[in-house]
Image (cartoon, rainbow, N blue to C red; front, side, top):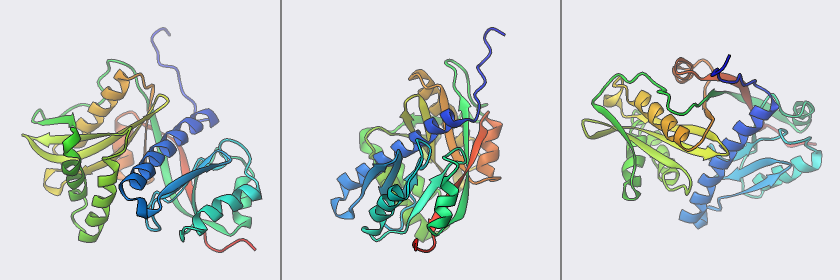
Length: 279
């Protein structure tokens, strides 16, 4: 029927768009880290279409994205990727879509990898001029932070993890770098003018990647994350994006909330870890 949105299948074409969007966002993060802290050794390389990035031995960004999605991966390609991490003293992790080259799981097994984590990769279409979330609190407002407010955004994001002081400190370091990425946008939700929640947005070739969701403990259940979702999707729509994506732990509250707002699961991604070196 006229006016209906085209149905998007969870196929290889979609997986390539989604994985590239996340990879490019993380590349921007690594480049921001390298600029802010050259001594960190942060950097990235592309091998066989996969993006391998290093952001420190303990960083969740130190891994690859897109492995096997843009063509077959040879043992020589794997050796190059593994050497990238080994020479930096980091363990080797690969986030792999189930739509990647069918021969990849066998190659990973042969080289001593094992699966250690699953992630739901979700998406929804974006149409101009459409409301994306049912806002519940008129006292919550959302805005893009200004150039001098990166530290405010980072500290608000880290405060959402305040139940653990160690984790909050770690997240503060990540948030401070994230806010400085050249092409990313940091959104702040305020309740009666007080910062209570954060969200981030990266755009890559028409795909809007939503990340950085965090709400301070005493600001929860106020509708801040719904307001942040709505603001970011409207922003992406106005800039010509046709898809939005986000990632969550399978079966989590984050996944359920995303599904309530029109997101559906494209596929479940597997993180592989090199448990032992290849013979």
